[in-house]
Image (cartoon, rainbow, N blue to C red; front, side):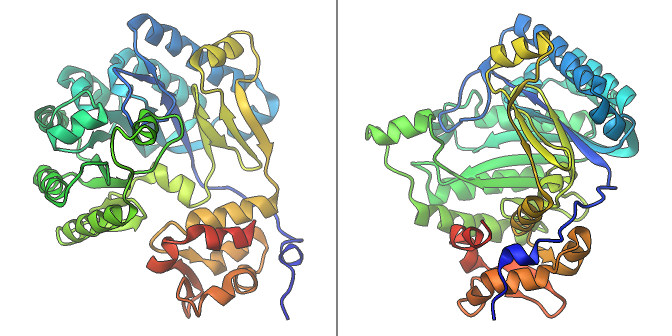
Length: 401
């Protein structure tokens, strides 16, 4: 007899959330807009960067003036701080100095906190990176996307292959010992030879971490327009998968281990900030387009920089969405996000965390998919989505809606 899922979740409770939190700062500026991008970004002008610094500081201070937020998070332990974009490295080090100082004075940073900056090759600057290193930054993520100059032109990236190699050298010269490179597979026009060449160049630079993303069509991107108008061929999903197999084989043969669907790392170098999302941890987001999860609230800030800035300037909530998350909803989100991890979901830990029989929930919702080879449950109650299941995630996740 199948027990209704709502019955299995009726006694769910919020987790205690005793783990250190993460903080994300969004920098919505770029030198130009890449064809595939739908991220929150604006073309950069120096005067806008100065104004944005003051607005982000004001937003952080606004949150800390709220009684409920302050009681929960002032002096909370923090073990990750991540500046993403956009192109954070387009800004001067004083932006990061002032934001970091405010965060450190408002929250309790652990001594070994992971502090990351995203860098685009064309804006990598040795003196600025050395200043960031002195401020405590210890991780750099370089957005290369491809080491093939023709592909970079088709993507409308602002750098060349030579720029990317130079930027990697600068990061090492600044003594960053935790360094990641991002690539994209499946961009129209990409070939087996070009993705292999990009991977060979990546491996020669010996980053501790890499994220290799399958290309996805983003609504509103210039790439979408190019495909719809027939300017370039449509995305070939089979080709993306064949290229990803090349990526997987080359990385695993060179000592990298995949720990989630798109990310690989040498031992001890998984991105701790990104693991916040996959492992159901609390994280705070500040800046235009930033998102956060406080435990019982999920929120997203306005993406438009002018609208976000006006809201903060006048002391108004800068949210475009602000939703209460019930224990039942958060349990399902934790299950979905954890399913992206290669290690899978420990159903015993999840049960204890939410006061829910997670094994019964899995058996009653997707147990029928075990025989189809889409999911599996190990003898020690670890839930995995198989490689076959990852090709049909919607079929699995819809069972939990």
